[in-house]
Each structure stands twice: as structure tokens, then as C-alpha cells.
Image (cartoon, rainbow, N blue to C red; front, side, top):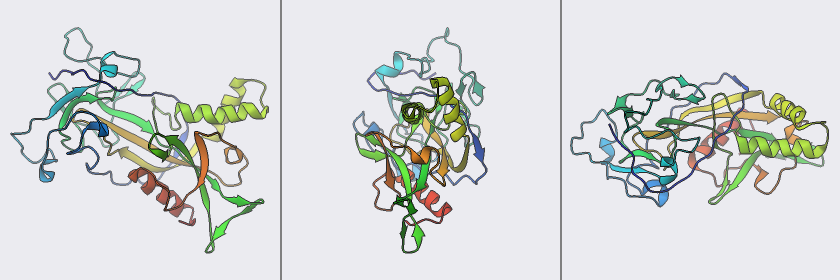
Length: 296
């Protein structure tokens, strides 16, 4: 059985539960961000893999992946699994809902190799968990929250098409769609939920935080499915990887969350092709723009 190796890293978790509108899942990406580059941009080097050898279907007997699991993961915080190199450790329930941890993949049942999950897409040049807490899929939510851009109450148009605004969050690398690790059925994320809940409480319309929380849950009950599946991310390894579900929550008349004035870390920006986002996020945002027949 494979064991973990110590270095450094961190993570997030959260919880929430809306319904989903039906929309066909798009085909997931191949490896680009997690092959033949340093782990997560600045971590250990991955083993080099010829592009035609990424698929598990291609024999590669000389494959010698690097091994890496961060020190923060090995400390076993609540969001991380234990190492599996001790006979006293209970084996996680892979490929099923395991208590509060969903170990199922959106891409179907994954195979096990030497007692641990095998990446559903292919080789990454690294085994272990890196900075990811869970063996196998690590589930995230990437909500795409939109409203119409308005000037003095009127919806703004460019070349005869209405203009969308989308919520983005500030990161060290710039702006990003909100994206966090989540527990089963959470489609929003803890930080995003807290941001919108704070705005509800600030408005003073609710007598308690619990009442405001119920109101927020109601606002984000129904969303349109944009993407569900594997995420090509620099944190992925052969044994741990990111998957996401991305729903579009759209406030057509800016009567609920569309009227919120957000803070510095979360803000509304115009959904436009010049917006500098992580490549898959930009693809999903473009899908939302096309869904609403808006200007891009």
C-alpha cells in the first residue's frame, strides 16, 4: 500500500443544499495543469510523462512518479483523511457516500491501485495526496452568481445584447469565480455563504441570524447546471484530485442577492471575454453568457 510523504500545504470545507436544474454535463478536460510542471506551481517536481503516456490505457512500465503529501494534510485536520499505511486505520468507503464525505466521482467508479484510488483521467507524475485532504475525489462547488448590469435602473446593452454581471472573489493571483471544498449537497461554499449572509444581516430585515440563514438558503435553492466533473488543477495527483459542480444562480430582477452590495473580497464585475479567470472558469462563464443570450 502506498504511504504519504511529508512537506507542506492547506485546505477548506463547507456545507449547504439546493436543488439542481437539469443540464447536460460537458466533457471534462484532459491533463494540462498537472503534468510535467512543478506541483501546484512551487512544490516538488513531478515525474516527466510523455503526452502519449498520460492515459492509463497506454503501458508505461518505466513510470516512476514522485511522492508527496503535505505536512498539513498529514497532521489530519478535520478535512483530511488519515494515512493508510497502518493496519489500525479504518479503510475509507471509496466509491460511495461515506458518512459526511462523498467519495463518489462525477465521472463514475474509479479504480483502486495498491489500496488507493487512481486518477480518473490519467497519470500526473505524482502519487500521494499533495495538499488535498481526501484520497480520490475532493469535491468543490463553483457557483456562478449573475445579475443584469444596470444604469439608473435600466439594463445595460451593448450591440443590442444585455450585459451580465457575475460575482468574483479576490485571490492571490487576481480574480476568480468562488470555488471551495464542500460537503455533500453543498453547491455554494462556506465563504460565499458567509459573505451573502453578512449582507442579509446588515440590511436588518431579519430578527435573527437563523432566520437570515433560512432566507439565504431559499434564495439559492434552484440553479442551472453548467458543469459537473473533473477539474484540471495543479494540485491533482495520481491518487487525489479535484472535482466540481458549477451551478448558475441568476437573479433576473435583482430583487434578492442581485441587489447585494458586496465587500472588497467579493464583488460584481461585468461578464466579458477580457476577464482574466482560470481557464475552465472562463469557459463556464462563457456558457452562462450564452445561456442568457448576453453580450460577451
